[in-house]
Amino acid sequence: MARKKIDKLLNVRQVAKRLAIDFPNVYRIIKAGLLPCVRIGLGRGVIRVKESDLEAYIEGKRSDIPK
Image (cartoon, rainbow, N blue to C red; front, top):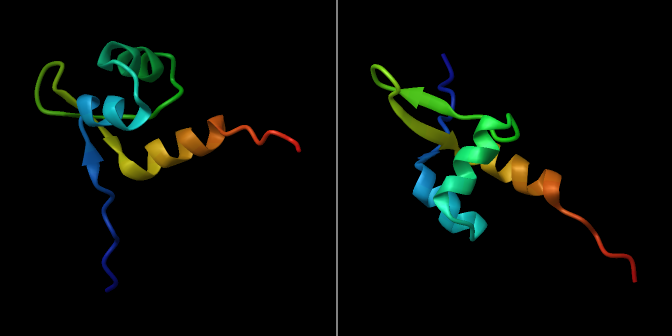
């Protein structure tokens, strides 16, 4: 049986650092449904973002400037 590769999970501060924004804005992006997340733990739990989901979000925001 082939093993599935598991994406690295990033916390909100790591996502904020990669996007060069403050971490409350990461929560806003997640709440708006623009960036999928995984909640781990009981109650509210902690939020983690798959690295591949972050890359897809960034790629979706890319704008090529014509020459």
